Image (cartoon, rainbow, N blue to C red):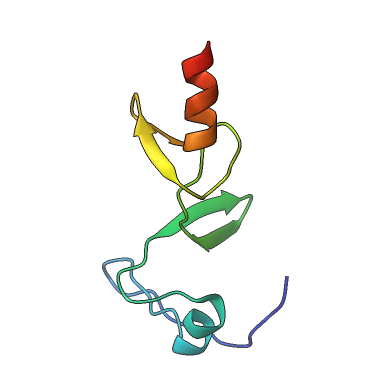
Amino acid sequence: MKSTGMTRQVDELGRFVLPIEIRRALGINVKDTLEIFTDEERVILQKYQPACSFCANADDIVLFAGKRICRACLNELKKL
């Protein structure tokens, strides 16, 4: 993990500003969705990219029975 040397305060509503330099470096744009993870005492933010529930492929995703899956896995399911 790399330290940026930047700090931000959390406001009374639990919000903080993610610096523009970090957003640019990670390709995070206005209205993008971030996933939030915890690891012991760490909070991890990651740009959300919906992927297939079976193979983790993020290309050509469709919704099937409430799950995000790729067309290749959907075709495999149709064969069963």
